[in-house]
Length: 321
Ligand code: SF4
Image 1 (cartoon, rainbow, N blue to C red):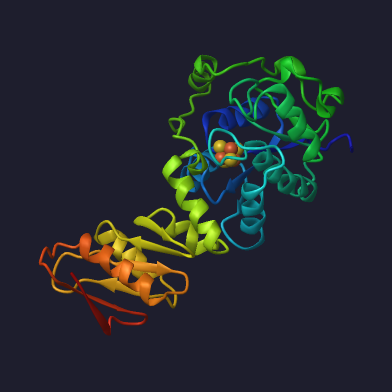
Image 2: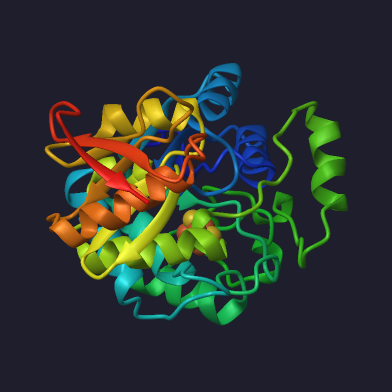
């Protein structure tokens, strides 16, 4: 390395407090930092892109956003969810594989920007699945970052990394935080005068109801970027190779209409009615079931309800008793 080249770190930035502290700790050592944020298909439960962007702006550091909600990254991620090498956490969350997936992408970006190493906000023992020592070792090895993955918040408890050995980073200034308590991190947030989002409820892959929807949808079709939105709205009903989605309010009805492709949709005219969407090739039988659901959730409580349906417009109708 030329004598005047400044050490550069690429920080895995979720937006949460831990990764914010990593940026501050490295900056305090005079290390040039750049942040990388992954917009994952099912969220991280931490921070959205806006608040992540705000923080990076305030700190004056570049922020690279990797969008994994479409195309190849989305398909690669879905493959991981279907068959993770290292298993699931409490839900459908393949945390170890998920981290390896992100770090492999980050590694390529690290090379591109000529950073010396990658830093993460991981804390030893903080998360049951991906932050115990064995999992952290697997993540480091399988992402191809052996010796190049620095966890500044727990570094004092972990093996020395290459940047520490090369004195690019002062190990004595790194921390020895362990476990799930947040006191030390909060103390540091006060010291650095940084605000941070309160911890989110975790990613959607840990939520039982969402998992059920996702599994059903994955069974009937290849997931695409539109599906990521559909999964978040309406009541979902599975009938064989079809999913029927019934809007729960006006906003969801509007969204369903916006998101629909060449698919059947249904409504009960002249009253408060859900918009219902049929995913998958519709048969007469499915149309009838969807019409029954539409009538059931509409405000029309007559013995016989007319339900209108169609693909580009509601030009057909069926009577539901
Ligand atoms: S909870 Fe696990 S699966 Fe979800 S984003 Fe975090 S690491 Fe990935």
